[in-house]
Amino acid sequence: MKISILLTINVVALFLIFAVTSFVIIDINSQELRKSVELRNTSLADSMILDIDQYIKNRIDDFKTITTVEEVRSSIVKSNDMFRNISDIEEFLDSKEQTTDSEFRFLTEVNLEDASEELAELIIFYEESFGHNIIDELFITNEYGASIALGTGTSDYRQDDEEWWQLTKRDGMYIGKLEYNDNYEEFSIPFGMRIVDDEGNFVGVMRVALSLDDILSDLVDDHEILQQTGTRSVFLVDESGKILYPGTEQDSSIQKTIEYFPQISKNRDTFEIKNNLGEPILVSYSTSIGFEDFRGFGWTIIIEQAEHQLLDDFSEIRETVIIASVIGLISALIISILISRSITNPLSYLVDVARNIAQGNFDVKLQKHQISEIKTIEKSFEKMSVDLKNLVETEKELAETRAKVKNERFAAMGELSANVAHDLKNPLASIKSATNIIKQNSNNMDPKLKELVFPKMDRAISRITHQIDEVLNYVRITPINLIEVSIQKIITSSFESLSIPNNVEIVKPDIDFTVKCDVEKLEIVFINLILNAIQAFEEKQGRIKINLIDDKKQKTIEFENDGPAIPGDILQDIFKPLFTTKQKGTGLGLAISKNVIEQHGWQITVKNNPVTFSIIVPKHIQNS
Image (cartoon, rainbow, N blue to C red; front, side, top):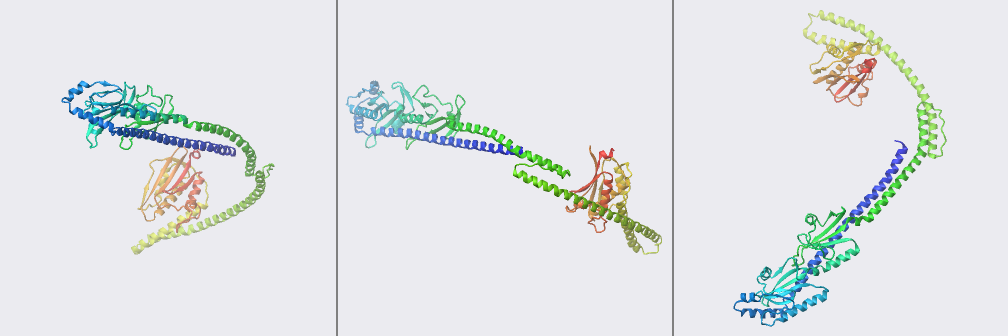
């Protein structure tokens, strides 16, 4: 890779790392900010719904206090005493039942106005204390269900036939559902409380309708503060998802169901929705769990906050980083190009100089550059060219001397080997002839002695003859006689010239092809490869498999055996002359084979796992 490209890549990568790191940091911070907002909004929702539950609990306690007022109790006891003297109470109640207003007066002959005045004073006290209407309806019945005192609102005279009255009498406490009262034109929650005397005996019931506006007064104040410090919307919904407080003054959206309310039970604390514009909105919520012995209404506070409002600052930072990254990237490209030119131009010149030196031109004159490092390299090149010139001349002289000595040595060794082999061959022939004569005249010889002596003599003569032939085949380089011949034919002839032991299995190829070769010399190669494999098995069971491969570029003859692998440290030396690991070998068999193959213009290779000798015959040589 060129330095200019490498330098440009590095500089650009540096700026990209900076940009990516900045984006990652911004994203991490934005995610942390989002988590912080989610936790804060959830905490606010928890606090708001707890305030509502606590407020309702305090109101219930206040109402219970009213039931213990002496004026109220004494008025109820008087009323109960009067009703006990009435012979037919049902007829009396039916006759007296009517709707009353805030000027309610008792419908009995007993003067019980003290209780009504006490209730009215309590209502006025609450209104003056909190600055708004708290109770829409407040009245008391005796133990027979007759309304005997009215603090505010309206009431039927008879209440014992109402379900709420029966539940209050039975359970001691009744809490109704939020309902809209046309008479008061607002929403309220009815409460019923049982009244008992000092001995705990039931004497009557008090009903109070708590205004929703009063319940939400603190929530409205909290929401106004939130709107001043940010853009968050607050909703209060009941257990079915109907809106009780829509985030603004009560309007037409009250009692409508929030569309995503079913998701609240499926998510934890905070989740995300899309508004009408497709923008993400974070929704945090908290559901009422009550306060002390008040179990709550199951209402839920929901806080909505647009996600883009949280990330506006980060979006601006992200845009700034993008602009800075683009400018930095362009600047990096320009700077890297300028720097790379100041470096690569001298280096390109030095590359040309090195190429000329490599081609043998040691008289190259170098230019002078201003960069100190380039100057140092130039001086090194000058010194290197001089040293290489001297070294090449010295190596050339040394190589010529070595080649001359080697040729003379091999020539002398070849001549000596040929003479020795020739001188040994004639006596060996005489020994072989004498052995045959002895065999023919050995009728009177001990048979056991014949079986012991003659085979040993034959093996010895055969081994010496083989070694002499190997020496002569190696030192005599005779011209090759090329003819077109079948490889299967040479393989068959090679095996016929050998005695294959019983422990060796031969697998011949299924296909055949022809090559142009010297048949006698190639047969010698095949015999050497087969003998090496047989000798590698020693006395163990083994298999020799011959494969013929014919593809587009070359023909391959493989001699494969499953004998022991050739040690890696000698694998590259097995084709060298006189190299052998056998005690009785000459070390010339594979060297002769290599010479024959190379004389044909072919190639021989070897590999392990399994041991395979491959003779490669290029087709372009065969076709020439």
